[in-house]
Length: 308
Image (cartoon, rainbow, N blue to C red):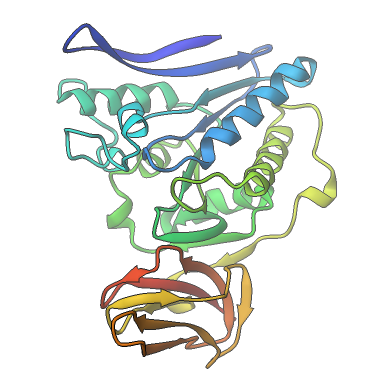
């Protein structure tokens, strides 16, 4: 059943609407699949499709409630922009919103209110256009004890426990976790693209959580749920940053093991035909982030390595 989460009048006879697909059978537990907070992150669109398709094809296996929110930022998605056009706002920095605030603050409040009290929320993001990420779950350190067991049920490649809570305070996940509504943040891929295999991997993990919560009567096959690498944050992640400006060239993809001193790529000058900088791994580890957009400036993030 398609339902409006919020609807507001806009100029020239237009309406701003956030919708969800409410799928239920009985009065069991409730899981919410949320995505489209940033308009250039499209991986979640395919995940929502696959979850809705799974439920519609086997409704007898549903033993609870699945709410699917495919687009929290429809203006950004229409314009293919990360933030909310015309408002100069990052949608994921204004939660829990304000019922008496600006238009976008009220929208954020209505979304937050609608999600509150769910037994699990999966907030799906993709990377931006500059970086390519392996499938991962990002968790605030203060919520780790509660959320890591759920994250492991996803069987996703990598679980990254963040320490920088101040950066996360106005996000949807932090706002929900603060009131006892468990929310996992999934990241994968690259902005503006959809990886079918990554999305299917996440869907298998979501099915596993649904099964363990008693929302879905069938578990995914055991070979679809892997064992996650858990990173405790702090100095266990090495950051690769550009030493000079130029064009970053690499033949390495993420999700590979690298060794200290191994060449990751080069920063070159198209004007002079010279190599300006060799980018090397500072440690042994798993390369879980790699630069996707080749133009870089001094200080630009080129990659992240989980230290082993």
